[in-house]
Amino acid sequence: MTRVLIASDKFKGSLTAAQVGAAVRTGIHRIRPDAEVSVIPIADGGDGTVAAALAAGYEAVLVTAPGPTGEPVCTAYARRGDIAVVELADVSGLVRLPGGEFAPMTATSRGTGEVIAAAIAAGCRRVVLGIGGSAGTDGGAGLLRALGARLLDADGAEIGDGGAALARLHTIDLATVRERLAGVEVTVACDVDNPLTGPRGAAAVYGPQKGADGDQVAALDAALTHWADCVAAATGTDLRDRAGAGAAGGVGFAAVTVLDARLRPGIELVLELVGFGERVAGADLVVTGEGMLDEQTLYGKAPAGVAAAARSSGVSVVAVCGRNTLPTRRLRESGFSAAYALADIEPDIARCFAEGELLLERLGMRIAAEHLPPDPTTERPSAGRRSPNQVATDHAAEPRPEASTAQRTVADLADDIVAAASHNGGSARTFDGRFR
Image (tube, rainbow, N blue to C red; front, side, top):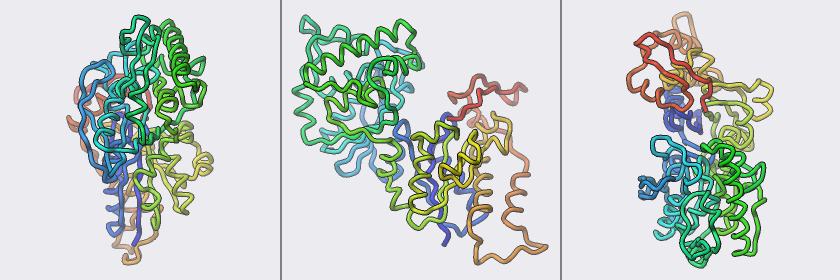
């Protein structure tokens, strides 16, 4: 039997990884109903990491924790045995900022620490932490405080939350953190190599993305420098220049310095969590993807990781995406046999967002027709019988339904939309062309 494994990331702002996989599977089955098609949603260690673990059979454990500005949010970690998968983005991330209002000086990672504390209290002894998408630049101080650290000013009072408050730090007490983390192994999914401070540090590089202006970036970098000095005094170790210390506003620094965490590439870690190595064995084809295929994809993003893992198992890989800017040569060099983009079959980007699942079905049909071995039970095409390619062509020519209200709502919320207007109202949506 022909076997296909679909291991795609989300199309950010449009479709979840599970939706992408389901749509491509439907398309493949239109051409090859006999094929065994499995879907494994994946992520690169940022948002979607917990969802990928849950799809792989982990159990969801609900937790209420403070968001980046202190308001309680309902989140979850994924658990299997003594392993907990925690996603910073879903509790301390930009998506959790009330009303989308930035809080560059006060946003905290405390909520992520509370989720980790809950997992440890429940008996987990291995914590996998995905740290992409942070809303703050607090050096991981909030996370450590949730685990029991005491951060005191010169008067012996607790300092406030957020990166700016670190400038008032005088004394650190890590005794409770050390006790709580005894016997706990922490692994962090990290795909950046920035140090904590300086021109390539957490504040300088990522602060503007979190709403910090020039003066605030300077103040945050100075506060993080002071934070690193205090941590070095308390631990006897200075890892501010460690590659990855600047990840997630400095959460990487707190993790490696105080939690003795190991940093690993996000997609590598996720593929292990979902058992990709076992699932790919015996497959005839792997389909991966994400919203945008570009040069960034080739440096630690999910599709590149899937392609590398599949190639090492001798399995051909194709990609689906919203838009592809990689030339064929670069695709082939990176292990992809081909790439199929929504924008190649639908030039109206608004429709790509609104009708993504329908378009992915069409791509799935093309992939089945062009990359799967012939169905041995199917007769050769005759004058009265259509070939798989003819079926795909006929389906592509079918009238497209108008986007539903629900689909338009998804498109209107997509962070890649610059402006959106009702299609029925006669005006066109305008996008900046990014799908990631």
